[in-house]
Length: 175
Image (cartoon, rainbow, N blue to C red; front, side, top):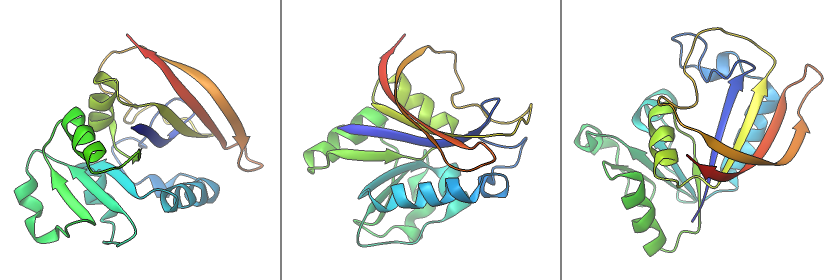
């Protein structure tokens, strides 16, 4: 399965501004447009419970959203089979199950914990990273553990005059 990790960071690699998880407060309109366009092109989206708790996406018949959480029972009232599901599967177990269901591509829009697990299990095939021209000095990095991920640049796109750029990479290897 092709798994595309999509994120926005500051120039110093922070996915959050300090302790605030509200990306829309500092990311550009152009990144928001890019994300919505990308999201609309994918029928399978996976996120962690932290991301879900912030965005609370509505159920849609056109796409399946899976929220990885250690406590899926906490979300029992929010589950809509085939639209919003909650799971405590490992990333590898989840991918295997979804491949068995016929899915060929996944959009991963998760925070550092879930992203780290997907990288550790060598499941991410591409990274689409918007870099905003901001430096925060504090905030969450892309991953929470030391790891080395080798990437090959696929494309660069300037999204606005301020200098927001979209980088697309293929994952070459993980050490």
